[in-house]
Image (cartoon, rainbow, N blue to C red; front, side, top):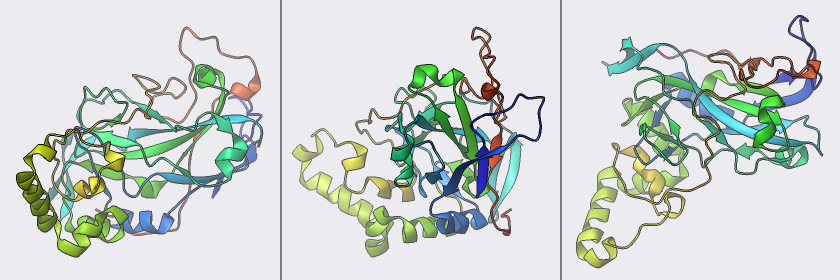
Length: 306
């Protein structure tokens, strides 16, 4: 665990800055470590795909009565794109031009600190997409690139006051992943099937059997196949599509995701965890509004994948 900067952040000229009681830990650490040691992969699709393992954190040390927003964004790990070759990842060239960075706002935001601390904060409805024209607020990523999620804790009453607010940014090394449209490493596929509760059908029958069963149902009930599909979170077997190639499934998208910014989050400077103010916004004189730095929470030693 790593403590965050204190509520009264000093000016940039003062260092080192003090620490507060705010602590953020990653839930399901053991599961994340299993994936990370092999090389985590996350499926991205046109319609959007949820993550597994999901982003879930435990927060303590917040002011119980103060309001906070919880947000997540994703930043590239490097300037390369990758390919899977002979059972290992290799650099395949220069990264694609960086896409507009979107920030996912937890649907409970804003909420009192007591609300965020009473149980782990889950970003389970967050979805990843490769659709650059996405209009549903999903996180847009390039396939075959490496990213990491960053968790932002912002003390603010609403989204409109975020740019003048105190915030802290946390990240965890074991949440780094490669975005793919189909799993490349068979070990990752097996780990997903063995650990994802939505993969029950794959464990019992195998991927092809499940897909063939759906095909037979569609043939036997043509009228039913014309009915409007349920939202993905309510659609039976929706998460099981993680284990096959990208399927262009026509589903109704949820409205929970919120796009905070078309570019980098307006309170975060590019490629850093520091605070920045737009040119049109007056920089506050209050020393508490000095830059906050991204804090990478340390983890036990492990063998990094190649």
